[in-house]
Picture (cartoon, rainbow, N blue to C red):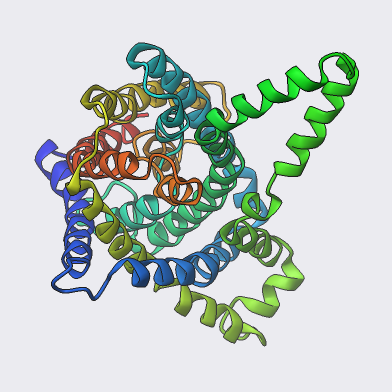
Length: 378
């Protein structure tokens, strides 16, 4: 496939995202006020608890046969690798830039966690529809693309809410924690033994683990979809033209269709905050952009090629494309929700999201074209 055609194929889905994002920003303007802060919050709640789980469960059920599950096992591993490498690069960036303590969790989270939900759900299926796509028949490509992207969304949400949530929480409360710990040490140092202190620390950590956050609705949706797809007896009940309970699956598809446009509109409205600016260091924003759009994709190529060489993944071009794309996504939008919850770094997060998503239009176009060219030759 010619380079020009690859670039056009990669650019069209990104332009669609940008168009809806721009609409979301316009609707969020004060003079329009259709998608104001309260409305966005309510719409986000509907997406989080209804549209998202329906989207994930319906698509995971459709594609999660036993044979496909054997093939897709590397997706959770690959996402874990992106989080580990992103965290290492984030730590190096923190050591280099030295941001304030309350922002370090935000920086680490933005480097580690990509937007594995919405971006993959839009870009990969849309690429399947474009003329000249290297992934075969559009309908078959679209079905598997939605399955891969939905599984990525569920796994990504689990990692985000179990890992990033806690590092943002710890970072935002570090000042208060240090003060409380110093007071505790000065009043109990003569009384408590080392083992007692360790026991108290373990109990404190266990009390702060939020299982409700870890098992996000989209993750629960995936857990519901897996047995429907994998177990033949259950699959016959829900999937297929003659399935007696197909109305449930059709309803899930109908609800899931509302997730993608709603998410993009919310992102457009949220990015408007970034235009107001903040006191964040410019070098910090540049560093996050370099980590997410230069270092991670290059490392991702090595990881995926290595996995293919050692037989850990099969040579399906669409599957390899999704694995590679997981290394080149903008930061997860859920991080913005976390900064709002803990009341630390909210304005800085808005600026980071604004610029990383602005650069994503160029980065995703380039890397999508590069990855399509690469998987056609692997």
